Amino acid sequence: MIALLAAAILAATPAADTAPVPDYGIAEGMCHAHEKGPALLVTAAGLKDRTGKLRLELYAPNDTEFLADDRDLVRDGKVFRRTTIDVPAAGPVELCVRAPHSGTWSVALIHDRAGAKKFKLSSDGIGFGGNPHLGLSKPHADVSEVEVGQGVTRASIRLNYRHGLLSFGPLEDAK
Image (cartoon, rainbow, N blue to C red; front, side):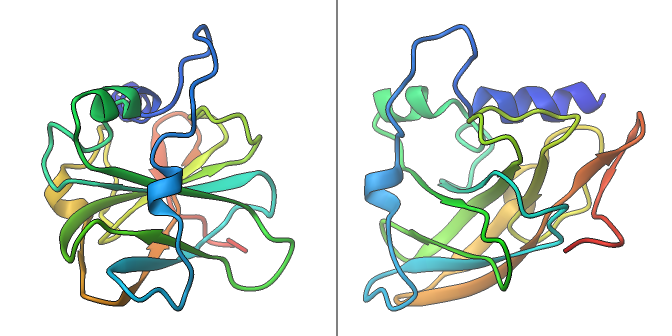
């Protein structure tokens, strides 16, 4: 069952056997904490460690597009935004992604600990807008939503990591 969650996340990352693809959504999603238009400034909570990269992704709030392969979304003209940062060695961790307009968006935050641009269930972390409890399948778009206003909207997303064979959740001693 955990494989369902991994499959959904993997669908949104480039496959290992395909040629490198452009970093879709990054140019459109770039922003900063003093953005003038609609944007989401997320504080990443519960990091397992300070390695790799963090990827914040913004999707239309429906199950068809949420966590869909970014190449398919771009090909079909769907809204998709992404920002990526190296995990800082210390201090608060914030990522900002620009929204095309104010409104409701489904949000995913991925801790790619190896920086491989591919989610690895055994080591990487993931969190969603609204911080839903993660079961053994991907969450629905509606429990991963964040309401983005006309300016910068702040939110905190807690990362979840695999514990043992069947457990997936936040760490108690997260950094």
